[in-house]
Image 1: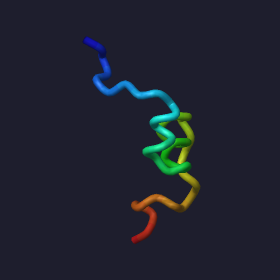
Image 2 (image 1 turned 180 degrees about the vertical axis):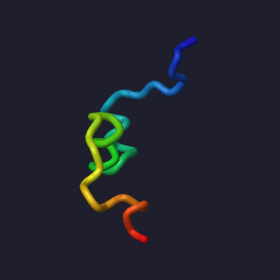
Image 3 (image 1 turned 45 degrees about the horizontal axis):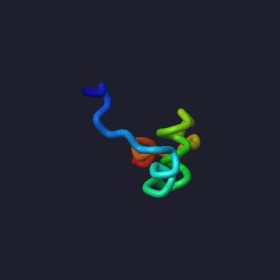
Length: 41
């Protein structure tokens, strides 16, 4: 059994995620400054 139960190709991930989500989650990008939910209070 795989360590990670969900295995998808990058093309499938791109279909399911927004461009920003894909960059952050799959390409190890970071959120833009002052855009996080914890900043807006």
